[in-house]
Every structure is written in structure tokens, then in C-alpha cells.
Length: 592
Ligand code: C2O
Image 1 (cartoon, rainbow, N blue to C red):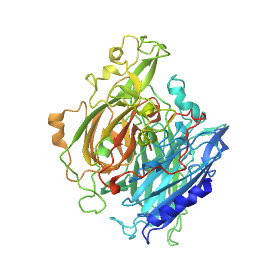
Image 2: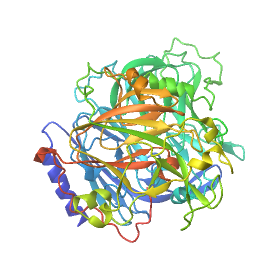
Image 3: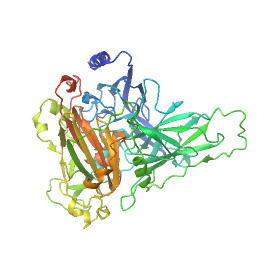
Image 4: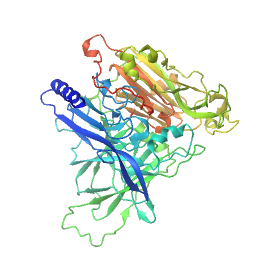
């Protein structure tokens, strides 16, 4: 039955596809496997036995069909992070938002097209923390073969991730009990690197072999659950040319900052003395104390030259690899400036939209942590007391996923039992405070945060009429932590108009907006103790998840759903769901 439905989907998708666009088809078998790292045997869930998972390579305009065969014991969805999914919200793969998970021993086929998008995106599972091992890159090359920059000789995906010893399905639950819940190590393309070792045996490193004079397009993806990363290659510099599958005005740098959910495309010319070796390093960034401190996460790979001209004599060359000078792991300024340097390649590039005004809807969303009472208590001690439980919020509501029916399905079927329990996300923080006051960071009895930490859990959404122009200002707060917040919106790209330190001030900060050539993104880095403003057009009907891409923020509730109404015509209306869309069953106990 699943095969028949898949064939029907394929036929429908192919019929819709223009003659010259290709069909890119994959089968993803999701299965558990044992892997050994750091002297430990760990049972992990992988696609086709690969970590990271298989790359999807396509050309702009192609249609992609992925048959997911779930042989794992968990409910699974796959989200195509950054794919616009126009009129195709059913294929977005956000667990309990657009679909119920694919149950064990079941199959579901996702079909979508890559129209108007070029660059690097990625896919990952979107149920609990399983995405730590269920992810891979999506490479979309221009149909013409022409890039708006020097044509690279080779594509090199660089996926920054983490290795976990912990059972990933337990990780999300553990946030609610604030147990020890840290990854074991950082990874580059699945390798922990030679700085990680146990019993004196170093872990394997990712090795990139380059040829003198050639240009490499490094396609960086931050697939980590936990941290922003700095990335450098000793002896080499980069030209940043795209992010989130949107072209940027190229700029040079020797350090790249990439937050979870983001992709960065950077050109690297192999122009260093070829007899030496060069380390590449991915280093996790974290907020300084009094934020709770993690171990230092660092993964190291190697760049090595091959096909060196015979006239070059490497006999006397030093054998050790050159080590890059990394920023401090508590340096949150370099990432602020790196993200501030991004400008869009518009108006020159035809794929990039122009900024639109006037603004129809404005949201100001404060991002932070709070607490709710455990059990059924209506009042409880706060300030780190075990009577209360730490959660994360948007405008003081901690998002709660439904567990019986996906939100999009409930809305489509007019299911009142679920829809009536969905609350409207407040457009502003319900009680303003000095959001970036550092005195709010420490969690302790009698601490300054205690009075304002009570929050509540609810399933929230915000509805927009078709084609509304929406502006959102995200405000990072100092509430019980002071992390940055990489905020990701499904189904839409947006303009990043500006960012700043401190509390957003509408009167003065709106003047700093870049309305000429802002970068177009699907994930915005909202700086630590600062804000970022985005704008988008709500022109893709459906229910779209909006959340922080840090797992320790999304799992405890820093999320909401943006609902976009249908437009007036069939061409602006979300079609019915595929007939084989997975049903929720009792097994559905996973949270996103
Ligand atoms: Cu990559 Cu909802 O996320």
C-alpha cells in the first residue's frame, strides 16, 4: 500500500515538473546501529548507516522524492530545513505541527521541489533530539552552471555536529529535570578529530585533500544540538558567498561563525605553501559565567595538499600541521560582527526578492527561560527550587506540542477539539522588564529573576492573512541564562533588517534597518543580550514552526506556530494532504 501511494505521489510530482527539471530520488532507511567512539559502544539511529546521513545533490528547479523506510523503534519525521515548500506544507516534516511521525515499520515518501533556491540547505529529523544523528546536507547548484562568483572546482560539505553517548530520546526529557545532559564531543563530518581520545588512542580526523591553486566551495552546516561554532582553517582565508541558500555580497574573513540551523557557503582557495599540512578547527561558542558552563567542545580536521608540482621540493618541509589561532570560546562579539557583516546580493541577483513594505503585522518576541510548578501545584518555590521546573519561552509562554493530532491536520479538518485549545501568541511580552539586565542570569533563591520567572505552558499560534507583510523583532533576554538564539522559521525565507545589543528601542533602532540589501535567511542569529529584526511576506499557506534551533531551547518550549491563511485562488490555496500522511497512534509519545 505504501509503495502504491509512493508511486502515485511520484507520478503527480513528475507531472507537475517542467520538462528540463530532473527528479532526484532517494531511499532513506532509518535504522539503529552500534558505533564506537571514545572507547564506548553507542546505539545510534542513522539513515542508510551513515553519519552524517546521505547528501542530496540537486539542481535549482529539480524535484526531490525521498522514500523514508522506518526500521527504527521510534516515530520519525524528516524536515527539509530551508526548503520553501510552497503550497506543500504537508511535506515539511515538523513532527506534530505538519504531520504525525512515521511509525516503526512504516514508510512515507516526501516530495518537494527546489524552485528558486540555490546553495546549501540540510535535512534533519524533527522528533525529539534524534536529529543529532539523523541529518545530512542538501546541495542545490544553479541550473545554468553559473555562480555569481568564481566557479568553484569542487564542493566540500562541512557538517559540524556532535557525538552523544546519551540515548537521544532521553535528552529532551532530561531538560525538564535539568540532569547532566551534554554531548560527548564535537564533530566535523562525523569525525571527532585527534583532540578527542581515550586510553591514548586519538579519534579519526576529517581530512580534506586539496590541489594547489584550486577553489573549494565549503558548504558549512551547523547540525549541532547545542552550540554556535567558530570555524577556521590555518593558513587559509575564506570568501563568504551565501547563507541559507541565498547569495550574499561576498566578503573576506579568516573565521566563520555558524549557529545551529544556519548554513554558510565560503570559498577557499588552496593557495598556502603546499608542503605543509593545515588544521581546520570547529570550536563551540558559549556565553561566559554566570551562565552554566559546558566542557570545551572542539573538533579538529586536516587540510593536506596533493598533486604538488614536481618542481616543488617538500623534503625539508616541517611535518607538523599548522594550527589556527581561534577566538576565545567565550567570545560572543566575533559572531555578532560576523553576522552583522552579511548583506544580500540583491538587487543584482534575480533569485533574491526585494524588501517589501509597508508592514501589516508587527510582533516583538522576548526569548528566555522561566519556570512552571511541577505536578499539579498552582504555586511553588522558584529560584532553582526542585518544586519548579525550568522551561524556555516566547513572550512568557512555553510551547507545548499536541500529542494526538498534528496542528496542520487539525486545522485542515476543522477539528475543534485541538484547535480550540490553541492560544494566540502574544504580540508583545505580557509584562515588560529590563530584558538584558545581567542580574537576571544567575538562578538562585532570592535572585532578581525569581519574581518574573513564573511562566506557563500552552500550544500557541499566530495567524496571518495571505500575503501579509510581517515584521518580527526577536529580543534575547538575560532570563536565567544569556545565550544567543538562532531562530528558524519554516516555509519562508526572511530579510534580516538589523541586529543590535541591549533592549530593542523601536524609535531609534528602526532607523538602522537595511531596507536596500539585507541578507535573506531562514535562521537568524539573535545575538546574546541583544535583538534582531526580520521581515517576511506570509504568502505560503499552512502551519509553520518558528523556533530556536538550540535543542535545550526548543525542547522546553521556545517555539510557536505561524499560521498562514489560504489566498483567494486555487493557486494560493494549500492542496489536501497526501492520502498516506501518517496517522498518530499510541506510540506517539515523542516530543519534538
Ligand atoms: Cu532545522 Cu524546525 O528545524
